[in-house]
Length: 117
Length: 111
Image 1: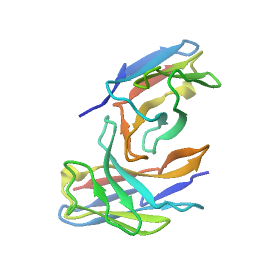
Image 2: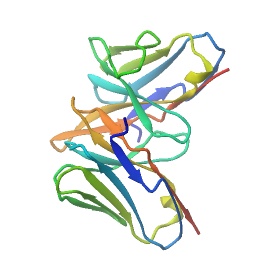
Image 3: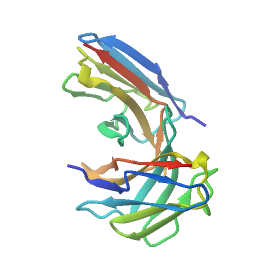
Image 4: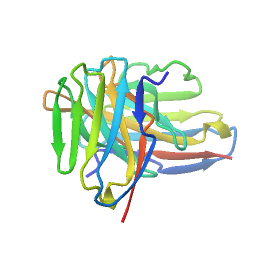
């Protein structure tokens, strides 16, 4: 079964509004989660690392004031796209690591399709 | 900067044929993962390779990690329509957990 969930699965919003996307780890705690963005027919691009109890770390070129990340608890990270514009329309996916066999395995959520009109 | 080069970008084959997808980089990764992604869904992990020269088999799928831990390949034997999907390789960066994805290979297997 799924170990990482996302909500909502898809959202349509008007340009200029803000949208919050939730990422939850199911039955395990995640001090770190990762947020990715995937444009049509392209691969996943890492946006930021969400850290429980501290600030998120953003990849180069990702605006931290536009993509607000809050790791409120050990099972929840939220990504808020502020003042969304049509170019923000994309597939947003989160992942969380689970210890496996001496290392870690990244499990991905089902993704959130955002369409900004 | 795309650190991982995947080839080919697209592959269309008949059921029963074999196929190989390549993932190459100039960088060394601590580990490399292969994922399959269906449209509108998140990637699903197929395998993680860690040791240079490692070979892992998952039913009809065979994964190899290069000796220098810079490249990898995925070979599917006797492909089936259910193998259709986007195959992604991803190298683990530092700090641990950050993944650098390749551009993906879209595989289509027709009956």
